[in-house]
Image (cartoon, rainbow, N blue to C red):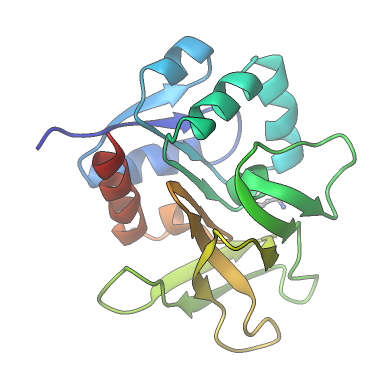
Length: 201
Ligand code: GLN
């Protein structure tokens, strides 16, 4: 089987870590900064970082309309953390000028876990991923407060103050997690996304 070509939106955030993880699961990886580079990929990862900055840069680099169009045409996209925020159709606690893509029908709260649990790690089981829960790393992470009918909840926090909060979702070819699998060396989520891209191509 040919390797899927997966882009990483390379405007800001932990681009390198996603590139390494995607290479590790056998994808051909490309940095995406221009519309022409977007045309050349079968799927896209929006990394963690700072969603307000990514939103601004998406406009400066004239990528908003091209990405919305590719999403509407069924391109698989995976957003982690700030990337999840960018994929939400509705955002709480965002900056008034930040804007996401026409992505997953969900309401996401930015920096949701609050000060005490600003950054934490927890095991999170993901529907469709075998061999036990992922070790999920949360860094000033969002959570999902509401999902539309088309959205499948793939993972929730199991205990502690944030128990039952939704932290992984999928709507068709769009995938989002509150946490950062690219920081752990566990490649199962990237493998799941690469399979999704392969199936869609
Ligand atoms: N708090 C960040 C934001 O609002 C997200 C943090 C992250 O991606 N690690 O974009």
